[in-house]
Image 1 (tube, rainbow, N blue to C red):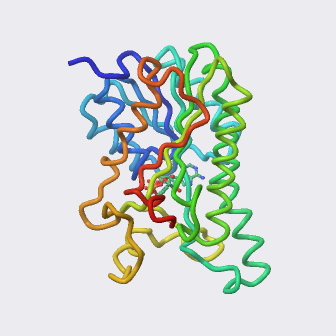
Image 2 (cartoon, rainbow, N blue to C red):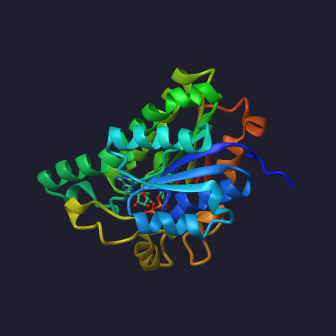
Length: 268
Ligand code: NAD
């Protein structure tokens, strides 16, 4: 059976773990070649080594806050695989729902700078580095968004503001890059990953999976259960395939698909 992304090349930031790694594996299964870029060479290499076809995956260590790292990654992608059809801006961090009233002014200021530099500037810079190649290939951008792009309480004010900013970025670029490049997003609900927090709050050693494990049974849940032990990032990858495919999603741009177990039904 032919995959939906046969002959495509994708670049995924933060592809060394979690949803980025799951999308990378799924894209390869759909026939694409994939470059994963992010922190931690060993982690990235492990995703390549465990891929169904390591010859169609390549890892590049880099920081999404660095223009030079992103520009080098885009040119390496094109040098190795010949084209760039899909960019998935995905690298991010969480704020562990730290509330405004629980932070000092200095903590708020420093955490904002650290988190926005990855979650928002990292997306913006990746799109900037990739757009000329995406114009050439008539490609697309598929951003990892969040339930926090649409609803409250998926993070604290800093994370929620960052994910709302990414929704705005997705819409603005859909307008600006049309008609040559489509820009969409996947608004993922909670899943057990290694998503870390800001070093400024000493949360860079903690992962979101521990927070889900601590959630009480009283916490509001979406109609379809998420963030239980069976929820795997792989379950979220289908929409990334759909939106990347020219054949399946040619007329779709500026749209966020919610993959969140139906949170909107009850207005989270
Ligand atoms: P994850 O920690 O497994 O993945 C994030 C990746 O980004 C990691 O590999 C990390 O090393 C990388 N990264 C962080 N800072 C970076 C930097 N400066 N430069 C390069 N790489 C960097 O967690 P995840 O849950 O897979 O997160 C991926 C995306 O999904 C994030 O944007 C997150 O906000 C979003 N998201 C996660 C959830 C969830 O519940 N886990 C829900 C909705 C959205």
